[in-house]
Image (cartoon, rainbow, N blue to C red):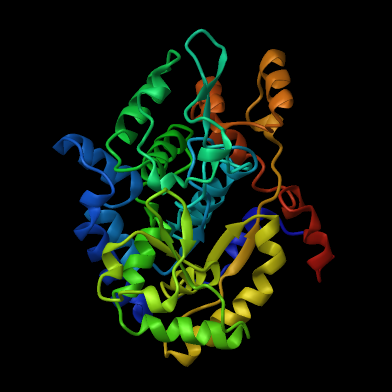
Length: 387
């Protein structure tokens, strides 16, 4: 039975030639709009660029890469199990495919009530060894539907409890973000880096709302929307949603769209259109969870129609579901913390793990890369054609 390493080694590399122009244009767009994502003093901006892969070297590696992989987590300072293992899978792929890049299309429009990522609070280890559940936002019904993209980064709220040095520095860098979603992106990268989950110059962050703005700067994108509605056989499907003054997402109907102004507005596309944009960058592989596995086949058939009919080069990436990891082996913890996590229905949290184990998390993950792929995706045996 194939191991994770076996599967990653077998993924095909792609010629970057059909995708270079689009990748270059996207990097130029990110650089042009960087000030809308984060600010800060010169040295802080330099460090943030290096963390999120927006420095010149990371951009160039992305543009020229023969192996771009993708994931799309929700924005949150919390990186729970099994999601903390996703960037590691991409880092392992980069060892087998030199020059590979992980393009992370971050979901920035999730709301404060997001039950899976719990962005209303922040779980981390304190210097005294306690686990802090720092409340960042109220969970009242009037607030829980507001999206992270609409909220300021809760810097002061995060200082209620003492912080480890690694968290303090990451939180301070994140405070330079223009909203909570982008701040969570910065914090996440800093904590993952502290756990050893990144390879040098191996990641480029692509917040979905920013990627969408890049997409609609091309007038031909309207044809993508038209084809999406045609092939999905849902002519009234809402293709775009906009950020309201109340901080929530609302349908943006065609008659209300100012296409010339849209590249400078906060909006998001339908999920299938988001992945179509991603595939157009030339993606060799991607990771996801159980929900994505359930709709991937239907989505891929629709994306193929959209891009083929619009003469856009693309490749259907190999999918690597990651639905479980042996968290207790990777981030072992004390009985008090284990009981606290069980009470909160949390399998494990990377920030707490970094406080306990640091870069040893990567070492322990590397030890299971040779285990059968069913370690990460038990249902994989249903897809096997091998012994």
